[in-house]
Image (cartoon, rainbow, N blue to C red):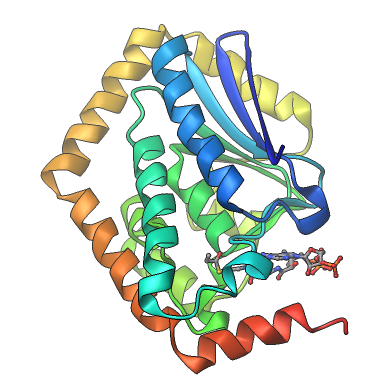
Length: 249
Ligand SMILES: CCC(=O)SCCNC(=O)CCNC(=O)[C@H](O)C(C)(C)COP(=O)(O)OP(=O)(O)OC[C@H]1O[C@@H](n2cnc3c(N)ncnc32)[C@H](O)[C@@H]1OP(=O)(O)O
């Protein structure tokens, strides 16, 4: 199984469990995220955490060994749309969603973390929208969410530079909610959050969701997915993916 779901102390935790491949996303993880959404509605937790196994990576984006076989925009679009849809459902869950960024979060991995309400970033983690180096844009909604989350110029810079940022840089540009050195920092965050009644957290989330609905967030995400699918089919993209996959051969 590529993921684990665990409910404990009112917190539903989703763990991507593919550390050997830097927790890259495959179809099974996408299905797992759909299961996570269903479990939130069934179990009514206070908080949701998205994290990953090991200390090296939160997520290295799409599994390039699998998705390299999607060649045209029409082949790439269903994968991008499926992941984009489930990330939107996660973003609009009725409870706070926390990304516990345990290591590198790049490409689609950075998009997953950006879809969450809070990002607790381990001090050694580096994160970035490196999609530009593969001649594509973000395509799971993460670019749109970045523009909702941090000031416009910071978001555009982070997306366009296509490099990884240190935890300190992420704190400075507002992407990281908190940089944590250890598990104790994570516990302190939840202790502080749990002082406030769950219905208060839910009410603030409802206010945020109403704002996103009235500013047509879903339509904007769909447009991002469409633009990424267009770029996906270019030789420049396929050549860059091939270079990465062949780098050690
Ligand atoms: C769908 C849209 C997108 O997400 S586009 C963005 C796709 N992602 C990327 O381009 C990032 C690719 N990965 C990397 O740049 C590096 O692996 C990062 C995450 C920086 C980690 O570097 P490092 O710690 O040195 O590990 P490494 O490169 O030796 O990787 C270990 C093994 O895992 C693999 N791996 C890693 N990421 C992916 C991925 N996204 N898809 C498929 N395989 C991946 C590497 O190839 C490597 O495999 P192997 O052990 O050499 O067989």
